[in-house]
Image 1 (spheres, helix red, strand yellow):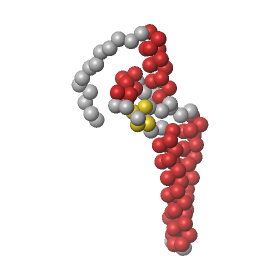
Image 2 (tube, helix red, strand yellow):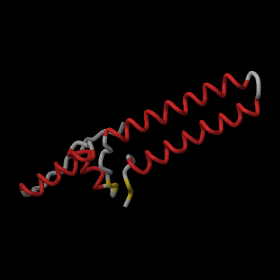
Image 3 (cartoon, one colour):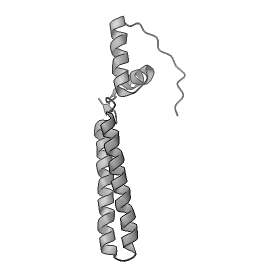
Image 4 (tube, rainbow, N blue to C red):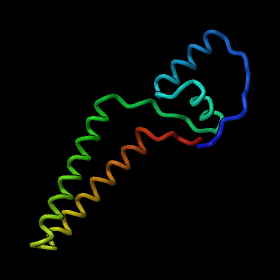
Length: 108
């Protein structure tokens, strides 16, 4: 982890501070982390709601179940196992795409 040795001081109005805190809270970042991202031209996304995390857990469970089926079936039929492994990989790619779209910060 990068050491944060330097301080930057600036003044801000009450309204500006309130907006800053509101925007930082929406992302789940601290005020400092939010400002560091903005300074690096990275716009943090709003933190997804609980439904997003529930959906991601369901997707993870589906991918794991498919992968377990593939391992079991591989003993008997490698063609079906290959299809199942491909499906598990596809679920994994969907999860990555969703994280990129809804969680990862956007660069300016």
